[in-house]
Image (cartoon, rainbow over all chains, first blue to last red; front, side, top):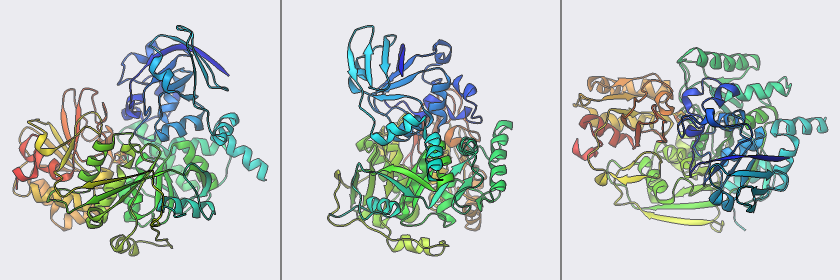
Length: 166
Length: 420
Ligand code: SF4
């Protein structure tokens, strides 16, 4: 799979309260959550973001709560993927489980500027900044996680496994 | 080759003799936890899978605590989804209003989490239970859904950082100050993906409550789990509560650590974390003059009886400063009753603080103490992110119950020594 989009840049330690504030967690409807995506970091984010856009952030993206509403909100807001220097553990796990593509790449996270046009090849982890022409390679996923991703997320994987066992 | 306590628990639950950091394992779970925010999402996923039963009715634990008692219609719908699911699947440990409490206060108190256990919870502060010598970690709703179905989960065995705390703590310094000090030192991603093992004289001296506070905030350093090997205090606490077997484990002397970090904490002062990250710590003597609008004493970090006792000691004979409000939230019904029996609730009311039924409420900006634009709060909770307790331009300062209570009296961030 390949994604091409404009980037939105954020700093380090973007927490799950910034991605989706708890005051909106009285629902788990993706479309509702999407409207408040990144609201406390940038109030007009949802209005500005276009389908396929990409978030680029610093270290420890998604730290804080275990709320899966965070990757759900990002996905439902139309973002195609997140590139970061590094991800917080639970966010990383959740993103893979629900099928939000994420890429860990120190260089790309540092270099890419807001508004750059970026192309990502999800299978190889190759990131190309179409604005500057620079290329990067994301850290590959461990084999087991790649299996989860290929299955389309954890639940599909579990269902497949259950079928095989039966 | 020796193993750490974390590695031992993971190995046992994966049916292996030993494991090494970085290894991916599939392990059996003792407890799977969810709350009113995360469980509804998990239930939706679980039902999509078309399963007709959970792996074990006794080991799936559901606690409505975040927006409960229901704060609005939408929260009521989420609570209803969870209640309906609990009924349909005969979930033994579903805790209705009147019996519930903040999950991470409630589960240890009810004897549902025990030494040697492997526990996942769809709540990041599930790491709290490591204080009892269990491996406990937070996951998302989809992991919870899969775990409810299979009773298993995959883990990457984490490396461990060993923390050694030397020395005796000064008065008014407790578990919260130790963990804030640690996070201030290593940063909010200082233990990312890693196990944090807490040891040393100061840990031995802490009560089980103080240890629960420390393990609770492992996630605030990015940790996968926080863990303290059980000792006689742990066993005293657990023995009267446990209804099943448990395993007392400890790290081998030749266990391998990614890092060993040692602190002499004998001169440590009470610590305050400034907005908007738990790592922005300062000792109380370097805080300066910061006026406040609200104090919150409660949460899964500091809503236990010992915390309320500390707060009451400072509030006794005083009034909450006339320009601020103080909100006290006992973590469970049991703690609430104990606080009444011990006369603590009287002290709080006499001091003109409000005492709430157990709930997460203000901790996550849910309800029961939301901050307006520009307002400041001293809180015994665990996160001070932007907008965590209300308006994005409000501020949360984290502290232990002693600083919080002293601040309530003086109307600014204050040292307990200024009050007593
Ligand atoms: S008290 Fe706060 S941190 Fe603890 S479980 Fe509730 S919302 Fe989470």
